[in-house]
Image (cartoon, rainbow, N blue to C red; front, side):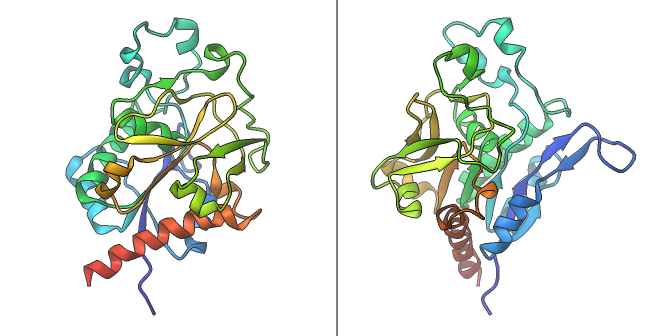
Length: 262
C-alpha cells in the first residue's frame, strides 16, 4: 500500500474554546474530511511563531494547506496604498484574537513552503495571506471600496453556489475543474487587490475580484503545486467532482514528496 502524504494545516484561532474558554485553535472538519477523502493525512500546525519549529513542521510533512478565518492585520499591507484606507473602512477588519500570532505564523510557513519547495493549497484567508506575504495588497472591504460589486459576503449560504467565476483557459484550475466557468460559494468581505509577483490571476468574477491565483509560467518551477482560491471548495466537495478534484490534485502532488523521501 502506498504511503499517504501528511498535509500540514494552518488552523484558525478562537477567542474562547470549549475547555476552560482559553484561546484555542479552530478548524472546520470539512478541511480534514476533504484531505482524508483525497488520500492525505491532515496534521494541524502548532500554534507557535517559533521559526525553527515551523520550519521543521513543514519539513516533516509533504504539503501545506492554508485555511480561512479572521482578517489579516491591515498594517501588513494597508501602508502600501498610495493613500491609506480611511478609518471607517479599517473598522470593518476583524483580526484573530492572538495579537497577530497567526499572521506571523503563516508568513513564516509561506516562507518555508517556498524555501523547501512544498506543494501548497491556499483557501480564502490563505489566498489573501499568500498575496500579502509577497508584498501584495488587499481590498480592505469590498462593499465600501467597490460599491457596485457583487455580494461576496454571503456567509448564510456557505454550501451554496452563489455566483460564477471565469477561469483562464489553460490554467491549472481550469484543467482540474474541466470548465471555463465555475460556480462558487462566497463568504468574504476582503479580496486580493492585484496579484503580487510571482502570481497571476486565473479566475475572476464579473466585477473583477480575483478568485484564484497560480504561479506565473516563468515561476512555476519554484513549487511542485500551488493553487490559491478565494472560495471554499472544502464546503462544496459533496456537490460535484470538480471541487473534489482540487483536493485530489493537491494531495497527489504531496504524495510525490512521499515517494522522493524513499
